[in-house]
Length: 325
Image (cartoon, rainbow, N blue to C red):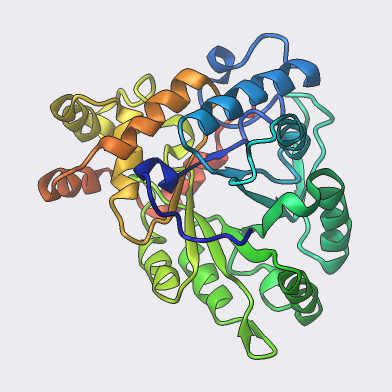
């Protein structure tokens, strides 16, 4: 199954990313309340399976993992093996970071980035060993404007070979220069064919700088996936308590919605946002997130929410200070 722009139910525009539940430590706010005290692989596998069951039952059909998300690929693979009614789901994974925390939350280094062809070869084999032919989308993880992945023809040839097998090639971006990285990726071709069929980027009410580049990607036929639409928890009700999020709280009251659903709905309001990822760590969070599919914000509300935007450099500096927990 190729990655295609979702059609049908509004819920189909929302996906589930497993960054927060595939490993014991991550940077999202509030993890002590979200995850069980026992974060063994066995417990987190069962936790992830419950979340996947709930997402599928509610109509979610895109699931997003990565080699560096601890055992997220494994958890997803075992869920797929136990469910024979999931042939309609689309699976995306990422390569380019290696998980190094050894299942600890207090590791000095949690992941190591390397976009070389050698790492691609190794991690593709690891992903294939777990997901096999269920892999629909393979993304370079966290590309920045200076990433060697944008200028390595040997890597591009390898990626094109995978595309020839029917797997969509994508990239995710990060950092204050996401737009530059996206536009550079859109120009890459192999044998006259565009290499990337998908772009995944951080975009939220606090960090909208990639928006114009994502619109360009959408207009050229790429599927656009939005990650971190909740700003790593900063836009959730329990954390959106300061003056910087006053408009979010006010409009949530007007709409009779949660802050998280409103934040996701504001992203989904853009026609270029094909899939908006929920990063929920609990079924309750997922249920609240997915009510975004029923929210329709008017132009005045969207304009007021635009006031939450921060300078990109400031946003990413604050994100870099979030602690793994």
